[in-house]
Image (cartoon, rainbow, N blue to C red; front, side):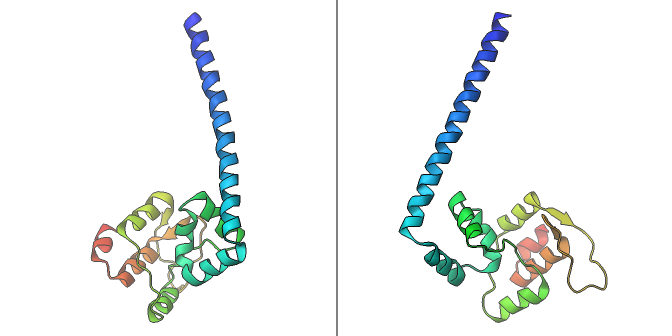
Length: 153
């Protein structure tokens, strides 16, 4: 009985410390964010993102750290990676085709639902939040010319 009471006391102490730690971390993150924003005003962040980050890279940027995630959200950016063939062709023609690593494709498989099927007769697939069509990933890897990724897929 005494051992159970001791374990309960330890659990309660740990829970209390974790709550305090979360509060301190939240406070520090807010302070750091405010300091970073003072160094670069939102208008400049907007210019940096608009001129240097392609649509398909916004999600990766926003997931780099909480500050970038909050900043891209505050700028009202759409966190969508477009894998449609026509969009990829436009990027390729404009010389703006970014390539993603095998690690990126693995991350997609680990973090999103992969939908099979091709929706016959449709040139544009209906987007599904949190999911991606396998056919779009295959097309994207082919556009990049990555045999390694195509084999993995």
